[in-house]
Amino acid sequence: MRTCRELGIATVAVYSEIDRGSPHVRAADEAYPIGAAPPRESYLNAERIIAVARRAGCDAVHPGYGFLSENADFADAVANAGLLFVGPPGSVQRAVGEKTSARRLAAASGVPVAEGTMQPIRDLAEARVTAERVGYPVLLKPAGGGGGKGMRVVREAAELAGAWASSTGEAMTAFGASALLLERLIEHARHIEVQLFADAHGTVVSLGERDCSVQRRHQKLIEEAPGPAVDDALRAKVSAAATKIAAAAGYVSAGTAEFLVAPDGSIYFLEMNTRLQVEHPVTELVTGLDLVALQLRVAAGEPLGFGQDDVRRNGAAIELRITAEDPFGGFLPQGGRIEYLREPSGPGIRMDSGLAAPMTVPTDYDPLLAKLIAWGPDRPTAIARARRAVREMIVAGLPTSLPFHSFVLGEPDFVAGRYDTDYVATHWGGGARPEITESAAIAAALAGVARLRSAARPSVTAVGPWVRSAHEDALR
Image (cartoon, rainbow, N blue to C red; front, side, top):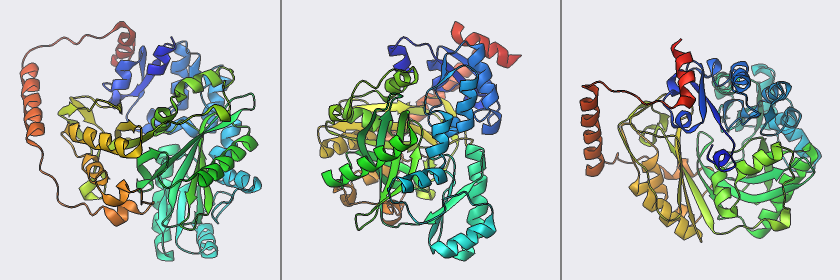
């Protein structure tokens, strides 16, 4: 929305009932309700979203980076409604957004893939046969959608049935489709992804890699660029593989090719994310490019305007995902009410935040609350700034991932760049819960008192004209 405002483009937000007071609703020029909190009644309801777009007179739909952002049928529906879809068209999403088709395309392009299925698995019986052929441990993952949702590690045959049931259920909830694939688990690997951009005129460029190996439940917690263990040879190798797959698919818009780098240096293509990624600010800070602006221009049919030789990277950036999770309790998602909030600022710090205070955080959606991104002329400076920003940030009222980030930013192996996808399991023991700082406790208490006082007297909420009609519709 900030990019659109800079470009003179008006924005329309949609929101579920529970998100009525979310910052994105207030930030838009117009906002419309689309249903109850459960995703299938709101954010996965393509018909309601397109109906809002038509009603509001929109020209285009930006799908964000969750829910329907990698749904080829939704991309087609948007186009059939006479709107621009700000992302790869449905045909491209089917070619590389669905994981098994992407694996086939990568293999046909000469890019290595981990041993596993090239078609979605039909049922548990087929999964058992495939797992025995590939050899345990294996990884189950949804064929459509990304973000680590629905992925399960299976180390022995006895675990497969339970993993199958939970993986298909989570995939259906998150993406509206339960199809899975199975592949051999590559342990102690680094997770390296390449940010791609392509236009409709045949230009495909790599904007460099990000290391996103620090994960829990196969979902990323920290991403950084450049990768601390990526040398020029590996960078050239993964970038060439990524652009080769994108070119073969006729790719358009922003996308990310993800790879595992085994301890012996071998690379294996994982998947293509046919959307803007959560960690795109890392690339924006080191390249100076606005990826959303590029998406909008490419969607409008404009050429990218630069080639591979024009891409320059400067300094280092690191992103910390601030999530509503208890890092001392297995990173279990937590709902609750944010009573007090203090976000960091200062040199080299960028906050992409969905936070406000007071605010109720539901458990209906992904627990991501905010992204704290630090840039520096080099990696040590970026880490130092991130460490300072974590100390400045206060989210009072519910557990968050901040204590974990505080630990990692001072942990010797991470600081030295010695980490892989097993980092959380091998380095984070949880430890003792820190006592809430005195300043945070006082701030939360004062915020609570202020709300009690305001609740005791009548109040009038000022609502801008852009959102009044949406609120009135909701009341009807």
